[in-house]
Image (cartoon, rainbow, N blue to C red; front, top):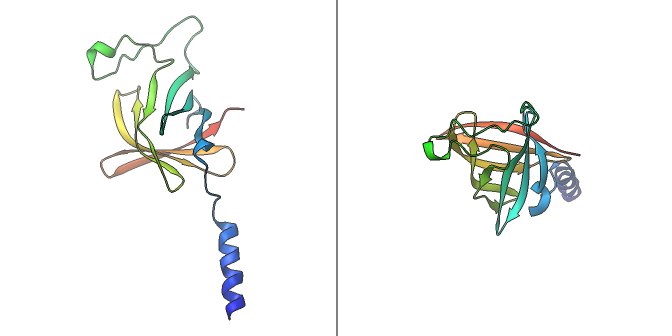
Length: 139
């Protein structure tokens, strides 16, 4: 019976995802739709991320943050804009962060959850309602 318990525990360990390192989210990521790329870096004890590329932005044109709730910020460029900040590492996930969504000017509570391979789940929440996006690492 003891051998069965040990074998079962071993199989569970193989099935569980590997513990993510804090650096596993650092790098450049395609957003869920593939319409943008976000560069995530260490920011002190946290991580933060900025938009570095927008697929539909025409060459030579600069899209602005026109939907920002704060009128004074509507003239800042989207490219280079910090949209992820305030995350804390807990149990292999980056939690208690915020994500700014320039398409509607809202900021949401967020988590970054590293997956096996080169994917990352970005989870944004407004109250109890959450939505996940799977981001792919840029190669």
